Image 1 (cartoon, rainbow over the protein chains, first blue to last red):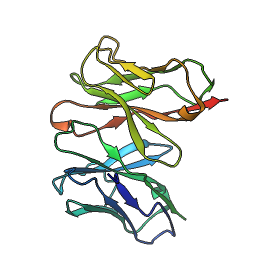
Image 2: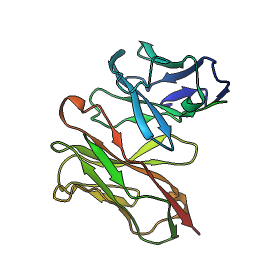
Image 3: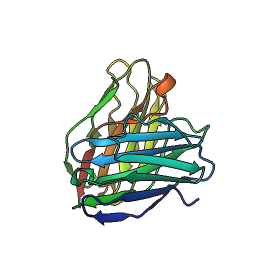
Length: 114
Length: 114
């Protein structure tokens, strides 16, 4: 089992540019989460998908952020335009239907917006 | 709302010392409780969990007991190793409609010196 795969692992971009983060959940998992980790705010849930449908996006900071899950094996988190305050580590996590509340996390994407 | 409070770090110990990291929670009803560990440059991994009062979760020499009376889930290990150096997160998952959520504490960094 390859685990949750995220790409890129590191991203450095300039303010105003579009950023796309990618996630491949564990095969067979039907729930997918995007989290953001910063020193100031800790780990925050951005959005939760169940069976590819967004269920809870109340944590998405603002309209510059969008997330999609076109199929069970792929999700994207897009920031357009990016700002320096978006600098953080973004984690994707997945969970199987009958696995209880435990989540399996990917290695994260460290985003730096200059 | 639901929340998790854990002790500030860093916690610095010598190898073979006893470890306690305090965690208390606020939640409606009886949530599931977790400890996750994050090694440098990696995503979060589940360390242990407890789903009901008086349950004891254990893994790799770490233990934590779900204490309903004190709303606590303190992490303990009898003899730490250098390889235990990491950031430890206490988390809860609410019951009911929000059971998909993981609400994390701020994390406690543990440094173990040889």
